[in-house]
Structure formats: structure tokens, C-alpha cells
Length: 350
Image (cartoon, rainbow, N blue to C red; front, side, top):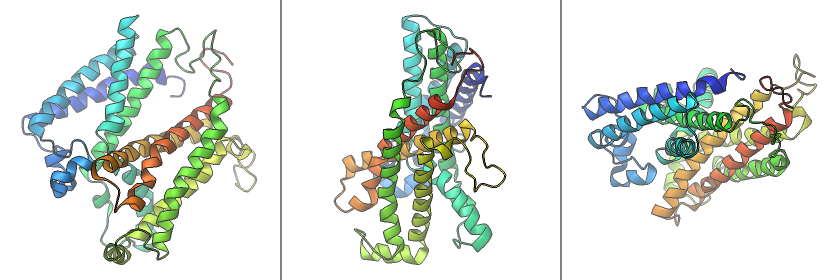
């Protein structure tokens, strides 16, 4: 898959776009499962304020369904043309532009914090339930609701659009679609940004972590006392501390992108010591986390502008830095990839 992804990613993106466009058509004609706005219980509960949490928070299937169908069909056509490598001059730029719009719309515009919640809390919930039976009264069904799963699917579809555009842009400029190198560019331009990107990607999540740890330790820190007591009773702050701890572990692992132990497993890892760390073992998780925190952080920025931050500075403001965290993490992952990838298996360039 590492070698052949440029050949199939466009077709996969086209198929996924067509399928989702078909769902839009189904919803337009009154079919079940519309996952936005009036079909999203969380958004319905928010009432008129739903628009602050999600830009589709007040949408209806009668209006949004046809738009989804049209976008899905158009996306399928564009992705298919890109997979075939069709397009020169202005057409090439147009196709790349459409792909960029699709990626931005799916990873930023329609998103909120829930894909991050699904991916982050799923292992916490699984371990807590399996080992401790905690938290009580909460199961996978409460986490994996269809609107949340739908947003997660769209986020990964947006990521597929990014890779589709990258493969197409490389192929149509005469570069290797697999590594991006050609006879002019060696593809190592990002390596120098690895260290500052890693430092940035380590500091920002720790700001968020500090607030969540303080809440779990008994400090209300900017939270209404009644709400804070309710959070203590239902375990909300402990769950937040667990998520923050995962973020801290992630920050520590980010350091591996510029350290020796990020390239060769350390001696204390029995069975793996001395072996080279697979490049994608670092790059894939870092890329996914980067996209997740960028999309969630954008929602908090939107809320800060539309709702203000006077009484929510400590709950929402650390999250407004997440797009910077995500961007730095993505850059760090790319720098790590370029530094370690060696000779390309396809074009044999080093």
C-alpha cells in the first residue's frame, strides 16, 4: 500500500464521494439517518445555539440533502479525473482547487469536536469498562452515535482528498507520485523545520493538559462552582484528566520525531530493542491526530468569535490553540518522513 497508494487513492476517494452523495439523495427524499442539524439529537438539544457548535447545526435534510448529493457526484467525477491523471494547464489547477475545497469543507467546515472525542475516548472507555467497570452507565453506544461516527467518516474522507490532490499534483508535474521527488527537487526541504515544529507541538497540548489535571485534583479554576460539583459527582473531570494524560503522552511521543529513540526502539523495549522504528508507525498516528485537533480547534475558534469567552476562557481558550498544534504536528511528521524515507522504491531517487 505504501508503494501503490498514488494509484488507488483517487479511485477510492471517487467511490466514497459517490456513495455519500447517494446518501444525500436518500435524505433529500425523506430517507432515514440524516446526521446533521434536525437529525442530530445533540444539535436539536442546543436549539438556536446549535449553529455555534456546528455550521450545519440548524440544517434540514430537505435543504442539505440535495446539496450533499450534488457535491458527492461532482466530487466523484473530479476524483476520477484526478486518478486518471487528466488535466493540463488551467484544468489541472481547477481540479486541484476543487480537491482543496473538498478537503477543507470535510475536515474543517462541517466538523466539530466529536471526531476527536470518538478517537480519543474510545480507548479510555474500553480500558475503563474492561478493567474497572467505569464510568458507570456509559457504554460504547453513548460514544459511537451515528452523528459522531458520520463526522469521523467525513474527516477521513477529507484526508483522502488531501492525498488524492497530492498524488495528482505530483504526477501531473512530472514528479514521482510516491515520494514527490523529481530531477530538480530532492524533496528534503521540510527537514529543517522538524525541530521547531516538534517543540511547538509539545508545548501547546500541555497548556490544555494543565487545566484538566487541576480540575481533577480539586481546583475549579474558572468554572462555576455548581457545575464543578456536578462534574465531580459524574466523573467528568476524571474523564477529562484521562484525556489530558493521553495528550501528554502524545506530546512526549512527538519528541521521538527528532530523537534517536524515534528511529530505533530503545533497549528497554524487550523484543523490539535495536530494531528500526517503522516510519509509518510514527507518521500515520501523527497525521491523524493533527487533522483531528485542527478540526476540533477550529470549532472553538468559531465559538470564541460568535459567543465570546468571558465566562468560558479556561474551558475553551486552550482549545483555540489546537490548529497551531495540529499544523505543527503535521509539519513535524512530514519532516520526519522526509528525513528517514531513504531511496524511493518507485523512482529510485534518494
